[in-house]
Length: 598
Image (cartoon, rainbow, N blue to C red):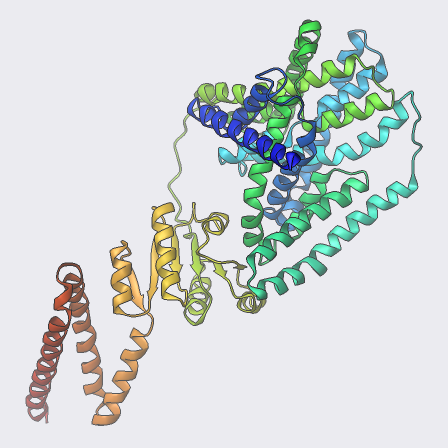
């Protein structure tokens, strides 16, 4: 019982520190990452000493990085990953090798043993994936040329960790592990199983779970998939984050992509925050007190040497001048995998027990400094902007459209939009509808369209229109309220069940509404009059008159609905009598016109 209470106290402590620090950090415009790092320092051994060490949450918190890479993989289809191959190899390989060579030579020139300098160069060449991608996402810069370059370098670094870990036993003075074909084969087998399992196993299982409509099981399986993939890669001696990324890429083309992303997103944010708190707690400032010049020299050398390498790469890759400072800042700091490499190097005797803590602290402080340097970058950004040039005339772009619901109505809407060249993102919670429609080439995703997290994942923040074509009137109303509250710029076109439902949607501010059976009923009425009167022309005029009259009916009844609800029946009867008189007058007029024509 005491253990359980201790766990609750620890959880309250971490969450309270995170909430307070992140709110203060946002108030100072430093971003959430800086807040989490400061929270870790505040509650750690060098702050208020509320927690002695962050070791007990570090392994748990590393899952935040894993889930971040999984979500990024979900947003990166294999086709786009293949398009990034030139940047992945060109930028990533150049950065890693260039940084290792430059840092190793600098360390050797300063008197460090060549082996120690090389190990430090490998560790310091890596950057923090989580620390770099979070600001990119917050700034909406992931799609820019500099953002894509940053992502390619980070992804290559995750891959490069594998050969680095394999090299460490050969560089150590302790019991070196010889090269193992067994480990290499295991790594290859895990990669093949991940590539095949995502398509052959995961998607059918998601489809089966979706049919049960048990969303908690859907979330559980999504989390299980991330954890199993990450653990398999770790067991094979590879990066957990790389495994999660590959798992996400394989599900990027799945119809369940948005629902999976929405299920994982809350856990990703929470665990990523814990990761940064653990980094802040792990900073051993005792080393800074005993060896201040060594630590500051390492930090300055890290930023200067890696910054110079990154600047040369940015120029060579022709990254726009305005994007180069952010590209350099996000990649110049140390990364979380440096802790792994340095810890293993100490165990194997590759690096001394006194040098490793100084390098580790330098990496931690570089990560702590990055959010503050980013804030400075944002203030100085205008000085890096390209000279103003005359902008070319705007070219009309196809609207971004979301269609909610793929039933009888939604299918027709999606087909028309697709035929007109406006490819919509369609959401539906019926797995059979989704599966069938994807076979015909529609971009359909499984999920409940009334879920706010799913709307964010589907791009409601940047879309122009949402067409609400759900079957359930209550769901239509609920989705309308969610959209109006959270996406005020998103224009709504809604399906209404009947006139009363249409009035409820009007009350919510929806202007473009169509009753679901109105046009078909009008056409059926025209056919009925044509058959009864044996006069197609009279039926056509009746339908036209009735349609014009209905516009007036809707306007007057809506006014009554708002101002005098009790007068609804009276006004309806008056309008019905008015329509009868209008049709009678039309018949008398036509009866006079016909003899004259004859």
